[in-house]
Image (cartoon, rainbow, N blue to C red; front, side):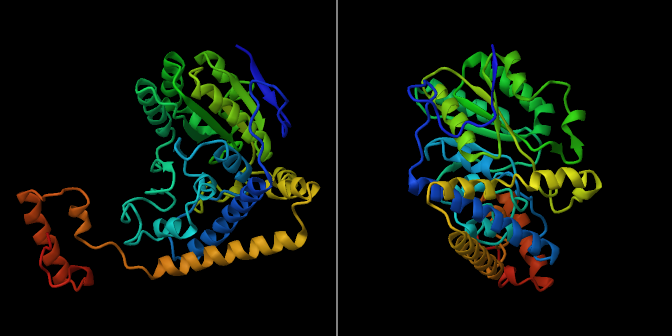
Length: 372
């Protein structure tokens, strides 16, 4: 089975089986606005973390085209099994920065009630976005299992799972692709090859000529695409989604890109990324590149870019201010979010927990009475 490579495939060929629906002007601008919001969310979260107002964040700078391009090829009824570097997939499909900020602060309006780390989002709507987990590669077999279930039910739902280059060294990668290939499960594997798994470069991660070529061993197509070209990513993912939706099985896509920041806010990339490499990739900034593409279509001006960026920064800043002012989750949610009827032994523990909180002056304890 041959691995294909797409260096620059912004426009699909007419009549091709893999033809992807074109984005109209509104769709192109929607994608652009989502990219800018990702960058703004990144910048604000870095400042919040450095100021000690949140505990953690994951930079997305440089990966925006891969995220948004992939997300734009999905229906809202499809499922996304994301990595922790996929802010754009949520923002593109209508999740608001405020919903995301509730998670960053772990407050009472966070869907996980503060029980997930920052960046580990859970959303009730508007898309099927599975809660992010920290262990590398665990989302891959989860996506395959969900795809197999949809297949067994006769649905045309497609699962997309995203992971970094380091994720290809996980057990989840092998077992996920192996079963997906055997079952011809409707799943798209998106490897965001940003060239470093924390500080480990790809040259020390794999001896394969690419990550896409690994698909051959699992009996599926492998595609390497320019991850900084939003339209090329969209076309590659749309083609893979189309295959999966009609029962032709999974596809592995390697989006070749570069993160222009640390692995997380706890990381110092200057210790392992050569300055020259960062400078080289800074010239390939996916947002600047997409702006040029829009400008060529008469859809972008410098004034529009400045306005879009200012509005995004203000929206995210306001979301941070609002989320920071929300109270933390109530103590009773430890129990009420798990049981409809609290078992007797947990009720005893709950009463003891509330009494301890009351004695320590914890305002969330109220009058010290266990409320359930």
